[in-house]
Amino acid sequence: MHRRSALLLAATMMLAAAAAAEPSRAGEIWTDNAADALARAAREKKDLLVAFTGSDWTASDPKLAAEVFGQAQFAAEAPGAFVLLRLDFPQKKPLDAALRRQNDEWKARFEVGGFPTVLLLDSAGKVYAQTGYRQGGAAAYLKHLAELRALREKRDADLARAAAAAGVERARLLDSAISSLGRQIAVDHYSGVVAEICMLDGDGKAGLKPRYDAWAALRKADRSAAANRTNEAVASLDEAVKLLGPTGEATQEALYFKGFLCQCQNDKPGARAAFEAAIKALPNSRRARECRMIIDRQLK
Image 1 (cartoon, helix red, strand yellow):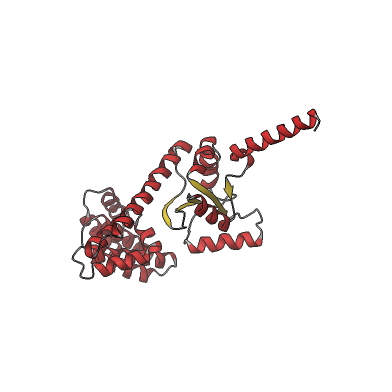
Image 2 (tube, rainbow, N blue to C red):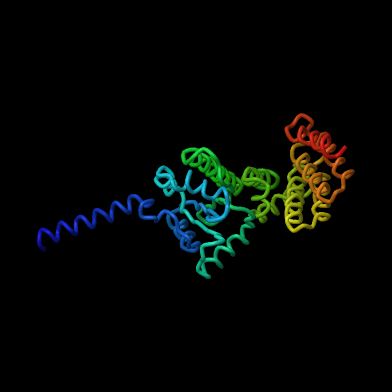
């Protein structure tokens, strides 16, 4: 091989190596192929970060792209822990029909209602966290992602301990594994675990079955309200409050939601009663102050 050809080949190889080492420059840290992303996450034993975006029409998506995803620190650090999957829902830019179908299927599967939504999945494709745009830049966002991954690690440790337990002790460990992931994720994505917890605490003496029954009622209220079935939503909120009891943060949030729905129906007496009950549930909270303000300004 001539010296000039050898030098050219060496230079080409060096450029290729540099591109592989700096995937942000090569544009390769993100994929839009969900099946490939899942397979790679399983193969590399990494978590999956799924960004549902409306790139050309939402207010927050450009901020998330510029302040976080487009930063060199994110491009350098995030791929070490995550396979990055972007599922875009543009209004102006055309998408291939197969890609749009894939994105729509994932949006429906995970009940994504707004953009940007960022889901974190484990290497098996199980959701463990949901977030979105946050101020503070790439460093703060990476710290936030690390905190969410710690929830997954706790989940895994609790599930491992639960495997060796039985009865109510097993129920408590299962509860510890999923409750910190949040009500919506627990109810939507861990239904089998929830069912087992409720079975193991069948008499409700450990306080687990009533709480998960209440969470299911609250989730039903969310879905009914989103579908404009307000009466169904209010009935589910009443069921949740009955299960949760008259005091506490969860009860207060349910009653606040009920008050808001009653306002939407122009039911001022019902709204006032709901907000007053919300105040009694946790009198010194920020939400209680908000309820008092609504009563004073809108419901007199």
